[in-house]
Length: 422
Image (tube, rainbow, N blue to C red):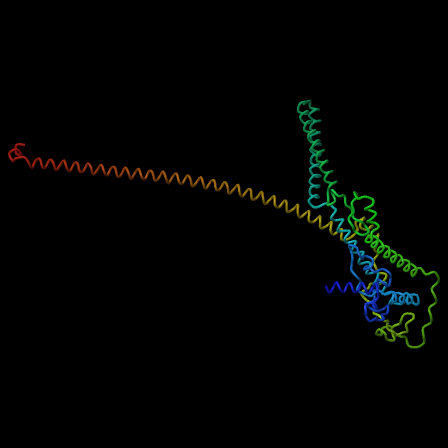
């Protein structure tokens, strides 16, 4: 709530003045740091983009008509004031930063509307297949001619049917490639395009009223105004540079050197060695710092619709980096696809080898089980035969023993005379 109340208070101060809000009026000068430099030169982005999608809120610096009149009077009185030149460069840098951010969004939107990597791969695959089919058609046509010259009519007719099938397949592939090119990108079904001025997404299917509302909107007109101002500044800078390089009259004769000791320009700022600008005495320091972060006038980059021409010509470094990065990603994808296929083939061979090894081990295990069961059966038969033979041997021994015992008993039961007789 505190932040919202502060914003409302600033809006009321801008509309009604600080006196109506009960705020003590401070008489700021145009060179004060709290004064908006962009407002002094007539174009503050906070006012240009208010109530739009790019709304920056209220400007944190002071917008005052009194200070603006004071600045115009000072500019008319002394156009070569270094503070005014510094503020103008600062104003140009601020406008350039807004336009450069808009150009970055335009490039990003154009990349979104381009083909995706998957669509690029499909296009390359279709073109490669069409090329292979063309080579096959050429080879088959030569074979048909050779067979016709040799008198092999039936074989040449069969080859001719194969050539017709290849031609129909090529036609289907070309039709598929055409459909892919027409519907590729994020704008396939919407037919989108990017506004070269403000970066908004427009559709070619929109009505004329909708397009007129866009081109007459505050956001589009604001960026158009910024680009126009920067182009005018660049043109003025170029004219000033040419006027310095080609003066209209002959150069004035150099004055003679003074007879006294020569002064050096190596003194500290504000000292006797520093020559002040016109209107300011030697040794007098300016009211505000010169902002060393602002580049010189000759090094200011040119922006505006020239950036559009460079974008269309494909000479922007960022776009080249994006294209190079996209190509590298596609190459990495293709190499990874081949590596994956080799790895899958290797794994398939290993699986087949493992399957054969498992089958061999299973067969050896079954063979070993059968051998062991056969050995167990043979050992069991041998043991049974041994038990049977030992049983029969014991039976025979017992029978023989009983027979001998009965014979002895019989002999013992006989009388002695009978034994002697016998």
